[in-house]
Image (cartoon, rainbow, N blue to C red; front, side, top):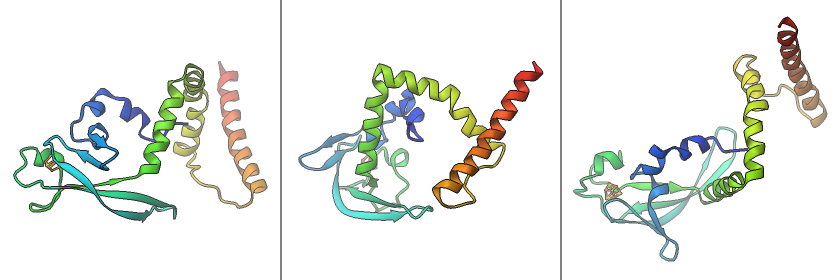
Length: 166
Ligand code: SF4
């Protein structure tokens, strides 16, 4: 499976966006990024955020040494005048994305993903968008399997009736 921004991140516009930190130089030894204004964004602290599903995400916070008078400021940051640009870097997530990219660049996995895109993803898209099936209403593995089974059966019946009509 890909991550939600996989396709967006493959676009040329994304790779060429000079203000996107994934396009900035990173110095592993010094643990800092270098921005388009040749300033260093150094590590300041660690931070945690809980998402709406209760999952805790851990970030490394970096801050630019000095954004004062930067000619790129309006394109680069919404930080108030006098404040420097800060970035929240989720190391684990970035590693995970890198691993996914590497896997998908292999011929065999790329082929499987191509099939998944046409065979599997439309089914989940239909379930979520048209049937509003976005969460399970039961608990326990057995009940979840049954509920999902009914939902998939409905999708298959729809496919079957569409094919029979042709
Ligand atoms: S606003 Fe700050 S981080 Fe962004 S390019 Fe300018 S100096 Fe660098």
